[in-house]
Length: 424
Ligand code: NAD
Image (cartoon, rainbow, N blue to C red):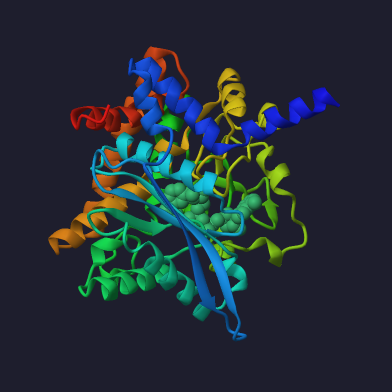
């Protein structure tokens, strides 16, 4: 019994994204030679706000939702990061997500710290009107700590450009000024950027191309499995499908589809709903668990956390795993995959395309001058290729896995900024 309990608590700890993030941050800072107080500063967000948001529902009742906004560190500049609408949102998860945003900003060298928000809700069960009330209520509740030069939100799981538009409008009313730079991921007509919607998937595609070169795999004809068919997963499947890859598996929250000869991605994209659901239309589905263990060359978790764990890491057949989702692989699984010679490209690097183009959107809003799509694509490619190769080389020369190498690059800038400011 005692042994069982101990095993359970170790397992729980390994699934705790905040504690595993801290472990790698600490390790990265130690390897870079920073003193303990730097870790003490960076292990928690500098600011964390919990809010209660009353929303009048369609049946006339008032429902109170809980939301969070975490600002990890603003030594480099304003904090930046998405807002997640999901029933499983927790304070710990939002904190971890804000730390990952700081790391991403450091990796792709943006003038930001990390932030993140979340609301405990299920938008799939809410009407358009209720979602608008919740989005506006959230902005009113956090308005004192956010703003174009303080903390800039963006989309994340189950939030989209419409929700960004309501949030921008609410902030602009409070500010008595049109404030497109308050939030990114907006519709183009409200100051959104070309290429923002597909930016995360573009960045992941660039990392897949670079990783494939290192492994001597041709993306054309490669067998790919993608978990999640939302913003990240659906654009990614389209980019790889158009590049000639064979997408042998995709999934959503309800199950997965598998065809060893390759799925018809255009057909599936046509039929998915706005929440990235498509498998409900089919009978011959497999589970998400089975999907991850399918025979393939490239595996991309693009849905939720803790999907590759010590329980299934031995069964992964891909030779490249590229994390489009935040936190899909536990630290134990990272170790197992790396020992097995599988090239694991970590979330803080591979999914940094979203925040990079969000930065481009904010720059365009601040200067009031907008760039064509080709310019965005070119700038993104340059940044992602450079970041991938810098981290790959550190992993090789320092003999560490790609996750630790990415954290070493990611923490350095904020640690240095905090040091110059005299904080540590
Ligand atoms: P989304 O809401 O558009 O799509 C999520 C997808 O995951 C949907 O297909 C949904 O059905 C599926 N899903 C949900 N729960 C699942 C479960 N338990 N098992 C399997 N599938 C499940 O979200 P998104 O924007 O595509 O984000 C996906 C991941 O990518 C998240 O981890 C997010 O933090 C990360 N990410 C997104 C962006 C972005 O710009 N959208 C940027 C960086 C990182």
